[in-house]
Length: 571
Ligand code: DGT
Ligand code: CA
Ligand code: CA
Ligand code: ZN
Image (tube, rainbow, N blue to C red; front, side):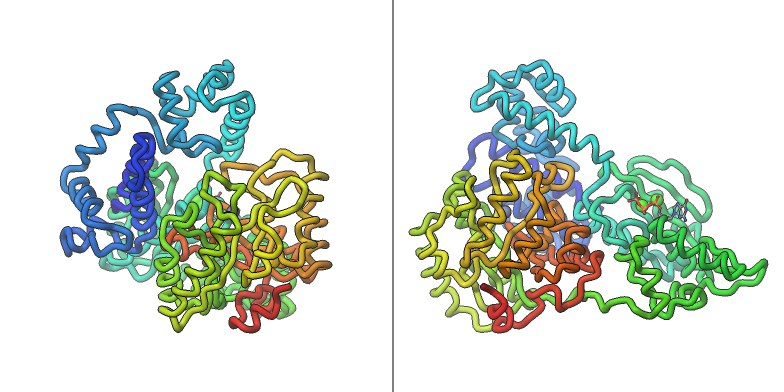
């Protein structure tokens, strides 16, 4: 499977071009990189089956990029890439995973200080050597050190969005092996945890050695730790471990239950078994030698007195077992329940696709509405809109709308919150928009009191419908700013401001615990993607999963409603 490799090299192309100040190529290569990472087919298989024209059919991939992918698939290298790389022999992916470090800085770091990786960067920052670089000060130096520290605290866990597509692709490929009856992804991925330590696969097969062999031989494997008849443990090239266990059909339910976890959930479930004089492990629910249940999760939960199976997302021992025993689990929001997307950026600011391309993709997904929420002027580096630019965009949307009869394009913006809790767009212009989101993008270091006050103040603005990504965190990259989330929830309730569940897999903000607090307070939320490209419009699943983890029903999330009803929920 080559998707991850190809996606990574395309991303590096984008960054190398950006270092060279190329105008359009960086965004084009980034779009292509995302598109390949999200494919549910292997690029090398596409190429084998359909050649160059097959590659060109992939979304966001034109002739030039297709040819480079072809070169890579045929020769395992790309000449132009190697040339670009000669000037910058640095670990771009690792360096740019640090908050505050982008292509321009990487270029400077290498040219001025010969910094090639994060270890070099940390050393230079600790020695106070970064301060002297152009556009670099003590503040940025401190921010970089913090970023390095924060990443280390994450303990090398991967963001769910980095590994879910990989796990799914591996599953698809293993399913094709003769004799394999079923494959499931278990563990933290099945529970949609925001970060993942390792991948857990379970398979049913009467000929386990076929599948264990194929698993160990996958081209994605970097190292085999252990390989037995029914069990394999490997490290993948992307840097995460993966294990596979093969089981007979009769104990698959028990194994799936056990390896889905969470550990805390399992401990409680096992206590129920013990109370009945039974035991529960990965092979089954048993009484001495007698098997009580083992083939399906449903049977196991039923025998333990639970007429409902708690969905994997909520198996956290946070009340789901008690509720399931009483047949009292809520009907969680479903993965197909959303009718529209409410945060999307376009090429008007820092998005990578035009409004039209975004709307067309949203229509394909089946949305009834999509809000175009480009940034506003104080976010200058994105080309943020001022009042005039917003007026121009509104006129453009009116024109575009005529081409689309199945989807409503909502005029909107992601309006920047200023230090004092005012906005950088006047109220007269805001009033003309269909829906307004407000967001913090600067001054992350205010005290908790100052940060909370500024946000609480903006929520009292009658034009502000939604508070976007309320805590500002970026997984593995940036801590949330200090903020009193309970005060924000209270203010949301008081002012009728909707809180966003930003489903972008690097954000997931609100996070599950906060969603739960908001739901319990009766605050309404929306789930959206924060998409910056057509590929990212498919991220709703991640947001929905977090809402499910917080026990949300359809009613808690207002973009489950049709357009008119949705609009009537706004201020
Ligand atoms: P991760 O990999 O850190 O993201 O989290 P998990 O939940 O995938 O954990 P992992 O891979 O260590 O184990 C997979 C599942 O196996 C876990 O969710 C529950 C089950 N499990 C593993 N070790 C134990 C254990 O010692 N006791 C119990 N009850 N269950 C366990
Ligand atoms: Ca795991
Ligand atoms: Ca594991
Ligand atoms: Zn934003």
